[in-house]
Image (cartoon, rainbow, N blue to C red; front, side, top):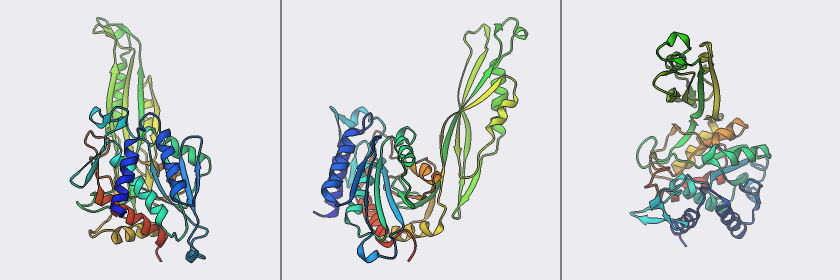
Length: 371
């Protein structure tokens, strides 16, 4: 079977398995495939993560026995649209050289490429393949794996990086934004609206806090020569109980896109009387801390395609943020294109999946550092 046929079939099989509410069946498939297709050491932890390891090839002795490289993905997906379901199975369709269906781009196609590259590579160092659960709900699987000791030296997280610098290439992401979601809660004292001075208007206090948010500078960072700029925005407001009552509570949701090493001082809002600021979610950003690793992945990306890939940045948080925070040197490199993930028409190019297979295998066999 050709690599194209094999990667198409494996992606089809993975995508057809529902995994937006329960990842168990998809994990069963991954574990069984790895045990059948490889001689690797395969584990399945209590969270549902599937992790396999293989030793360096004999010819790599002296080069990589003390170094580990992980190919990382996730097998959970966001809920499918109605058109992406056929009973309990997900619909998978092939048209014009692309596979359509929930999870094709984000990110079971790239997981399939990782699995095949892991199986076929004669690695220059210890090679690991990991597929996590719960990425779409805050990195549940990655955090559990890290807590249990998952600590590769290097990781390529196979989230999307295709068509970032230009059409037709798969680039190498050296940094991505994180997301900190928080709530501003303003409290006052209710009164009849005909006597506003008798109360303390929580909406006014919330507005004063939002004025502070509006004046905060967006954080910026530079990673391996690439610039990344964060953002801060008030996105929801909820306050008041009736048209004739001075409100005693008002809440404001703030969406902040963080960058490595910099955080906006949102705590300044608490300088307003009656205002409290709380963090609801904090997905970490990622920065590659080793330019040599970025160059090694870029060399493999160039060897795997005719185009001219570049080092780029990515706006979306991934499990690379958790891994980088725990000390693993990371990049992101995968098949998904901007605008494909989480959509009703989600799809991935089969030729790009083939490209990613070549890229991942080449990196595994070259090693994570330039020769």
